[in-house]
Image 1 (cartoon, rainbow, N blue to C red):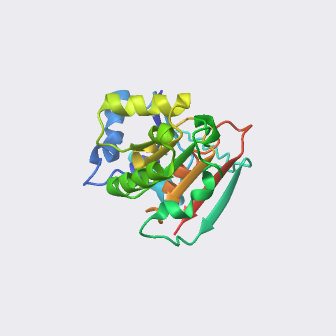
Image 2 (image 1 turned 60 degrees about the vertical axis):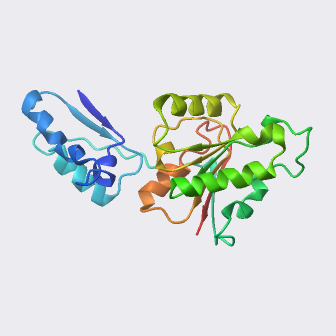
Image 3 (image 1 turned 180 degrees about the horizontal axis):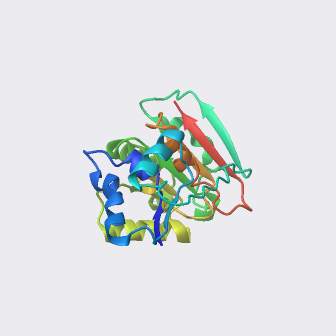
Length: 220
């Protein structure tokens, strides 16, 4: 079988300016014939995305089974608020930090959080502000994450976040799909994302361990 995971990317990213090859996956049929199964998996498939996936993978020429299990996550709570400090949005989320920050504060006292920004510059600003707030021994708990980092630096960042050395990542879409850190408490999105699918993907990074409770916040 040929399995396409995160199949919504065919719709979200498969335009001529970004990943046009995504829309050419049907060419695989020329090499596999009708006997090889094609499977498409996604947690965020809108009706529009399904139509594009269907056409791109040329479903419909043989028996088709569609399984919908929904994307409800009972261990997540959702909050949408007005962004009051547009020049320095960190001021809107200070509640995610420990009430008392001093030399005795430990890394594990800071809940893990993913903060999503629209640009790399916005990520860096958020990192700078948070590091000014934290005691010196905890400033490296906050790290930026974007696609322009080297593979080694991105892998090191994820490893540090997974292990707990890093507690807060300020990220672009580069920290969306494939992020399976189980104990993220907060997923916070600054500004409206380009689609509901993107928002669901970002919020879905929280509390991947379903025994934990996560908080998803959208600030607009």
